Length: 102
Image (cartoon, rainbow, N blue to C red; front, side, top):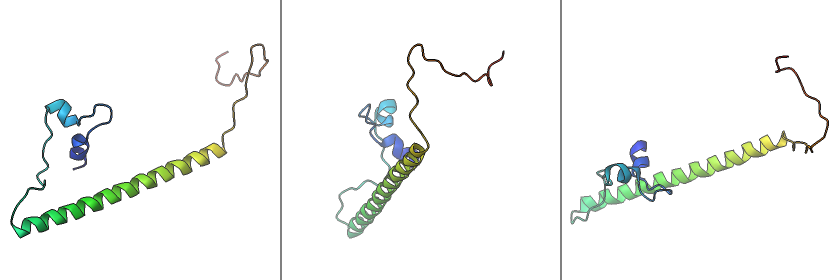
């Protein structure tokens, strides 16, 4: 289901889904809404819409959580980093020979 979803979603770079690019069509999942006069079909369509809304809400929450986690990791990593010194041509520096074969 995840692979199908990825392959059916339009990509920002190509403006087409991978299915459209490789197969020249967008496949159906089989649960698309169709108009029907049967009350059961309307009920099923409502349930599908509710499920899709729940899935989209969950995806939004996951995206927000991942973004917050990324920001936390960046701020923690930035606490331990300092700017590299600026060297100019002719500056004298110490060189470690630990990893050099002399």
